[in-house]
Length: 388
Image (cartoon, rainbow, N blue to C red):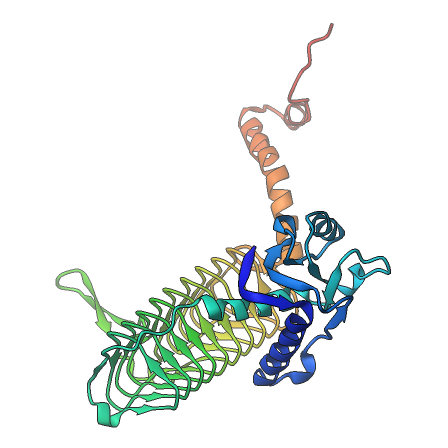
């Protein structure tokens, strides 16, 4: 069980969840999208901490999304549960917080507990290239050893972690967290309420070269194209550890509002990523690619340069798409080259079942003297069972 600093009543936790949910959805510009939350039972029950249903114990507020988890929590003596309305029957065995999205309530309470667990930002010596040119908002914090270039803007309440590196002209909005050792190259612009995790590099050069063959030496010379655009990151974006986003050639690479990017993702120069997209670990996106809003790219998706992915499309893990356009629509795409998931599964099933037969056919074709002989050999049973 993850214990609170002090015991809390279930009513206090319910009120905290509702308040945090309302504030969070309002900040995201969608206050009407918050799901309803209900307190059922005795709100004065004392809760000591949070636990998964199968790890619950007396004093715990457990999270249950299925009947078997609710049963486990009750048998373990949990003080209360967070459940869906479907589980909130008339004979509910425990006090409960009820929400159509119980994971959300559990996540909010975990987030509040995480604020208590995180060490306070250690104020220390940061290196300023020109302190007088830097605009630091009220309540912003800068960690030990951070580098702050000239003409940098840091919004109110933003935290710059130790050893983070902000080059000249970087502008960061309010209430952001730039984690330790993140690098923001010159001119990068970050909106409000963004997080950039450890080791991410935003605004490095795009990968672009002009090929020049040298006929005399037989070499192929790669002449570097300098990239003078930048990167614009809109509000409520999160960028995972060790991810990289290249700056544009002339115009900016753009990451749309609300998009979430996992660790170890590469986004090439001049890409335009839409709003509220999900990009999972080890995705690679070639330059000048456009993603519509709410696109999901699952792990290890690879997109070639200049690809367009329509709004709401879902590319499943390891999908490859080298050129062209995937149409908009909540449709899963799979395989390389990408095709609808239904087509991909059909092709895969046929390949696994029919390729051995095709191989057998051509092996027999080399040896057959006539069509009838080929037919007889091909359709003969592969395994002759002993007659007893």
